Amino acid sequence: MKKHLLASAAALGIALGSVIAPAVAEIPLTINAGFGHWYFDSDRQIPNIDEEYRLDDTDTPFVSLEWNFNDNWAAEVWYSEGDSDYANRNGYGSVDTDVAAWSVNMLRYGGSYIGKGNRIRPYFGIGAGEIDIDADDFDTVETTVNGIIGLRWMLTQRLGARFEYRLLYSLDEDNKDGYLSAGLNYYFGQVNPPPPPAPVDSDGDGVTDDIDRCPDTPVGTRVDSYGCPLAVTQIASIKLLVNFDFDSAVVKEQYFNDLGELAAFLKRFEDLQVDVEGHTDSVGPEDYNQQLSQRRAQAVVDMLVNQYGIASSRLEAKGYGETRPVASNDTAEGRAENRRVMATLEVEYEE
Image (tube, rainbow, N blue to C red):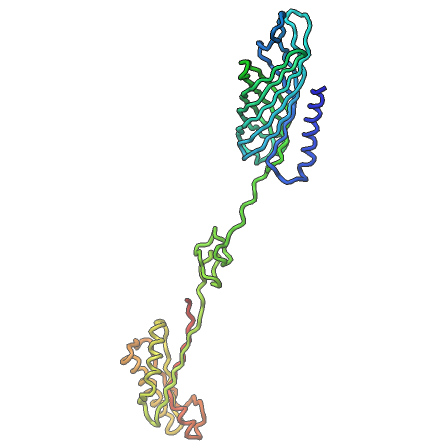
């Protein structure tokens, strides 16, 4: 009766495991169940009886529960219980006997739970427990140490077949019993590779650390696809306006600072070429005014070259005479505005 109850419990455990597994969280737990055959030591006899009674080998079911610490190591609680007989060696009858054994074991697996089905995982283990042999007028409970070798055939990712041999050595009676078994197991733990960790963006620039070539970018900095700061395009500009006295091409001292600022701008942006424009009012002959505007423009160029060190090749004086007024030549104020030299510079640069 005990054998049937244990077998039913084992079958029920495997069935329930396959049904409820999809509904529960992954836990590193394995249920094992099946049948095995005992090979008892030939010295197992009923003591203090004249006739020799030897314990018959027998079939018994087993169940076990494993807690998997990782892919390769597991702790197991194992139990088997069933019926046997102490049979008289001379054929004079037998004595009904119950045999139960339990042990706590450490198992070492090869391979991994992560992967597809149809994989063989060998294992071995050691442990300790007890064997309880109970006949009508005889009972022994012995402490055992166990050695285990086996194969776990993963039929699917979770369901597997188990083939195993255990050797139980009795520390009390010096008996050696073997248990050869086959069964099924169901694993509730993780069977698929874990998802890769989410990429980290430590400096918050929108580029993850695994491809960020410029870590620790200051917050708010515009970066390229590798996390390095983008060059920021800016525009720099400067305007020069120098007014002249009537019929004069002499640069007045009040404009020296403006010329110095223009020279500094040109030294900062060394690729710039500059047109220096000279202009006049409409008083006098047109040809004369053309020549006067050219002299005014050249006077500014000469100061930039001689006093501020700007290369003459970067400067070109252009006289426009009276052709480009900015104010009316009908008033003294308008004519004063038209007597001028101008230069306007604008440049884009990156920083």
